[in-house]
Length: 377
Image (cartoon, rainbow, N blue to C red; front, side, top):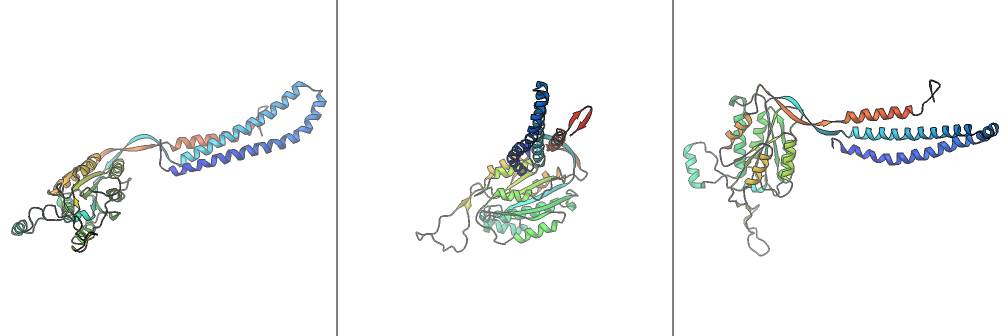
């Protein structure tokens, strides 16, 4: 059994002092009753001459009062415990809810760590074939940085998913940025220009820094989705897969539980390349020599395993990844919609609510006594 609001279970700690107060009240209450009955009982016993039947009747009445009070207190405690559990939102098992899924929601998650400045990605397409040839000669086969390649691929993906490009008619876009920390830069919106403007602001600006936490990047991206909005949901992660903190596995499991598909675009080369140093090249270490270069690699196995866990796919960023991504998203971003079954937790709070109300009513009925066909207090 799981709980939607487990913090409410802390109210159960009140049960212990409640039992103590009931015990103290029980002692004080019946001490006063016995003090009133004792003088009368002496006269009563003198009048009946020690009649055994009368004595047994008196003891039976006292035992009945004790039993009624104890049972009433126990039922009230049951009522309070059931109320606390109901407020915690208990869930047991799963149900399959049928829903109409329309369109798609796509959140671009871009890694801005310093390793994304490494220039070991495929060169960006040039405006003309002549320019492309000159770039290949001057820069070599691998020339653009991982971040530049990510921005180019993200822009191409958005352009291919727009309605005028035969993409889904009802699709929303968002964007999340992260390094050591992460933020949802553009919430899900129908205005694709907001995402284009964000990508333009990233182009050519040195905003990368030390530290990578892919868990926070994915959590920020997942925060854009609304569980009550039935769409196909995708997070497109642009990263080299290297992380210095956080748990990518934990973030992927949370995506899987919410039916969010991860499409991982691996940036960089599996052979690795040195990470550019910040600041001047004249920086030296304590021995008077330049610091050793830090080599960054594409963690293809990490990204591939994470994507496959959510039913997604891994695509190399050195390929023309945008058409492949668009094809995967278009397969489920259907304009007319489709009926799907969504797995959800089975809430059982109503069972504890009914049990608590029943216990409360029975606790009040215990104070009533039936005599001669009538109910009396």
